[in-house]
Image 1 (cartoon, helix red, strand yellow):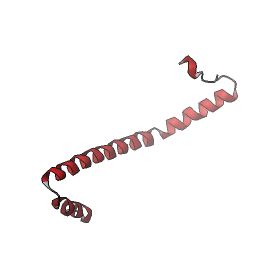
Image 2: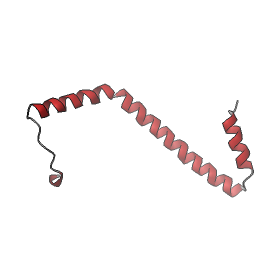
Image 3: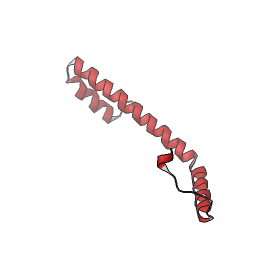
Image 4: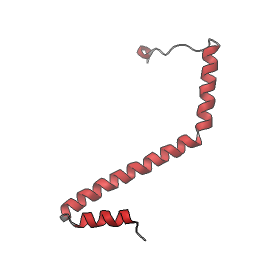
Amino acid sequence: MQSPAITTVMKMMETLPNALQEQVADHLREYIATLHDEARWDALFANTQDQLEAAARRAKAEIAAGKATPLDVDAL
């Protein structure tokens, strides 16, 4: 069963000439692909949140202990 939003978009697209329908479909494909990519990144970050927090704690401890040196961007 289609959602009301999909039905509305389909009705709107039907009012366009075929060439414009193709353009809209291409834009929607790209947008949906972007949404999927963002969802994957969100899941990856959520799954590694504990590790990221632990790394941040270690970095802060190294800084406090004087074991860290400032990043020299020019040396990169």
